[in-house]
Structures are given as structure tokens and as C-alpha cells.
Amino acid sequence: MPRYAAIDIGSNSVRMLAAEVVPGSPARELATDREVTRLGASVFRQGRISEEAIAFVCQVLKRMVDAYSKLDVVGVRAVATSAVRDASNQAEFVERATAIIGAPVEIISGAEEARLIHLGVQARWPQPEETILIVDVGGGSAEFIVAENAEMKEGISRPLGAVRLNEVFLKTDPPSDVELTRLRKFIDDKFEPARERIAAYKFDRVIGTSATAAALVSAAHSIPRARREEADRVRANIGDLRKLYAQLAGSTLNERKKIGGLGPRRAEIIVAGASVFLRTLETLDQPAMYYCAAGVRDGIIADLAARGVGRERSRLTPSQLRVIEAMCRKYDVDLNNAKHASNIAAHLFDAMQPLHTLPPDIGRLLESAAYLHNVGHFISDTGHHKHSAYVVSSSDMPGYTDRERHIVALLCRYHRKSMPTPRHDLCRSLSADEKRIIQMMTPLLRLAIALDAGRAQKVQTVDMQVANVGVNVTVRGEGDYDLEIWAAERAADAFRQVYGIPMNIAKARK
Image 1: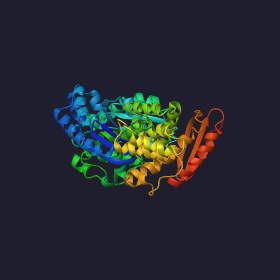
Image 2: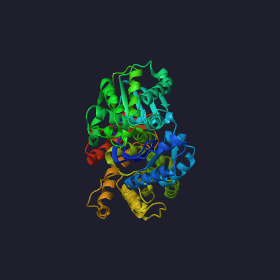
Image 3: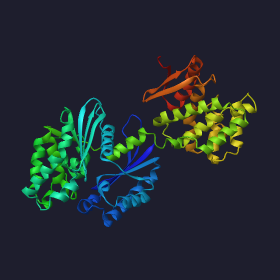
Image 4: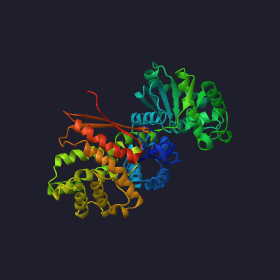
């Protein structure tokens, strides 16, 4: 299963998430980190990121990179949002941050930020048949996102972040009535263009994201900050939020820090952030807000997975492909047939990843075996699978380690006839990990070969639906491909033997 890392460099904090993506299930969190940096404070005061802020953020990024570097992630995306968008020295910041991360830091637009937030919410809390409004109040901007039936209809970014508003409007402690009035008027003015675009929608629910939303819902329900995860999907009524806002706006900073659910740093900017959420609900006449723990990081992970980032690690490199094709030509293997089988094998490897859970690099070895399983015919048609193993294990294969070449040879050995067993001499020297690779990949290789049993490339697509009770394989092809279906059904026996669940093979309906 692919692993990804996401970094969100926001105006108030930097967040990192490393997760493993399992198709059909929520991403499995492997590592997470968050640090309040107030990156936007100097930007909103002076128009540029201070040297102290840059140095601190780079220090935080180094810590986060160290954490996910141990997890074998196949893709990383780092984004910077409102504060960096507005900073006059953004180029210097991006250059230094990119050097730390080792991957480009993208300054994303408000529209892209909204898209990622929407993806994150849908990945973490799917809303397949509802109309929802997502409100994300960050440090520098607020995003207002409308989604219908899980499709984003509107994604609007406005300069209504909590750090920005706090720096510009709230100078006294507690805030004065004049400051609060000016803040409210500014929020209403900046929200108006968004209101005009979204007011016609009828929402099933409003969902607040970001740490400010978490703090408000937690405080409204007396959920301690240490147990903030309990606030996920919890509803806060507008009446409770009004009372909470009045308490926050009338309190000093020290008093706010004592309110359950607020962290000491969040207490510094909570009045401005709470005002945005409350005015949004009031202006749109909405009765409540739910909190969702998803955010930009979750959206980045979902987006990387949807794009198949890192999938190239499971595919033959150009240099490996040249080696493999040269071997096929040397041993009179039909390249068209070999390539067709390898393409099917690669597809099966990806589709079956939730079950075999092997690293992406193993996909290259399966693909190699699909190309080379018939090289043994050059020696003899009788027992050619054994000859194929001998040819591969004895060949010079630049781009492959000895271990990798040995695994490819064993996959060729077991592409037909008996399954791997400890009594076979070739298996006795294998490590536990290597034995598992051979065991899990052998049924997939057999199925890929079976789906081109007639060697006429009749099978066009193979769709696999993985469930706990079995795997359903739907095959679509051209002409008469009954032979391929029959061969695949025989190969399914090996799959059931190894994976412990049945595999059902069927033709696609015309």
C-alpha cells in the first residue's frame, strides 16, 4: 500500500501528515506533527516574513522530514498558503524551505487550498448524498466550500484568517467594543462576495475545519484539549457558539487560556477566528456547525493517491526494461505477448495491494517475471518453467540486485505446476520476507499469464473488486476469450490457496 507525506505551511502553524492509503478505507495515519509558528504575523504587519520566522519554520520542517523519512513514503507534497502568498520575500522562503524538505514547496492559490480541504473532508467524513458548506478559518485566509453529492461546486477564499484579523483589529486585552465592531464590519464586507455565490444553496449541514473550529466545538462541549479528537463530527448549536463568543470577547488573554478546549496559543487568536465562524452561520441563517478533523493535509494525501503518485516505483525503469527486452529477444520470446502479460501483472499488483501489502518495488519483480516466464522454452518445452528459473538466475541483469534476480527466477519457476514449498531446494535459503513475496506474487503471475492463454492479446481490461469475503474479477475482451476465462478460473485456485479467500472470474456484460 502506498505511503505519502503531506506538509501544510500555513499562516499560523505548520502541519505534517504521513499516511498509508488503503483503497476503499480511510488512510492509516503513520506520523503526524503540528507546530504553531505564527508565520503570518510579520507578513500581516510588515508585508514580509521575518528572518526569525523563516529560521523557526525551517527548524520545524527539518524535524518533520526526519519523522517521515523513516517510513518509506513514495510521494511528498508541501504547500504554502496565505501568508507566503502575500509575502514580498516569498522566493527566499520557498528556496530555503525546499532545500530542507528536498521537494518543491508550492505556493497554492486559495482555490487550490479549498479543493484540498474538500478532498480531505470527503476522504475522512464522506458526504455522498448531501449538500454541505465547509468553512475553514486558517491563519491568513478563510475558505468557503460548497459540495453537492461529494462534488465541489464552489471554492471561495477570503482574507479572513484568525492571525490576520487579530493583527489588524484586536489591539487591547480584552478587545474593546470599537475593535469588535470594526472586526465584525470587516468580516461582513469581505464575506459578502462569497455569500452572494452560496446563499442560494440549502445545506444539510455546515462543517467547520481547522484548529479554530476544533477549539470552538471543544469549548462548547467542555471537551479537554488533550481529548480534542472526541470533537470530530460533534455538533455545536449557534446559541452555544454565541454564548461562547461573548465569553471569549469579554475575557482577557489569561482568562481565555483557562477555558477548557483552548490551547494557550489558540487563546491568543480565538476571538477573531470565532467571529468569522459565528458571522458565517448568522449571515446564512444556519442553526449549527459540525467539526471535522480533516484539512489540507488529508486532501493532499487523497490527491496523491488519486493521481497514482509513486506508482512508477512498481514499474520497470527504462534501463531495466531494456535488459528484460534484450533477454526476451535473445531467448526467442514474443515481445508482444510478454508485454501484454506484464501489463496485466502490473495492474493486478496495484489492485491487490490491500491484500498482499508488499512494497511498491516488488511490482517491478512481478512485471519482470511476466516478461521472462517463457525464456525456458529456448532450452526445452518440457519443464520449461524450471529452465526459465535457471536462465534468469544465471543471467547478467544490470539494474537488478542478486536478491531481486533470484526472486524473479523463483517466480518464473512457479508460474506453472507446483506451488512454492519448503521442500524445494530453491526455497530453503530464502528469508521469511522473500518467502512471503514468492508466495503472494505467484498467484498473480499465474493469473496474468492465464489472461493471455491464447497469446492473442484478446483481454483488454481487468477490473478487480477486493472485499473481505473474496475478490471479484471482471474481464473484458475482444472476440472469443473463453480460453482465457477458463485458464483464469484454474489460476484462481492458487489464489484461494495463498490468500485464503475465493476469486470469482466473470466476463464483463456487453
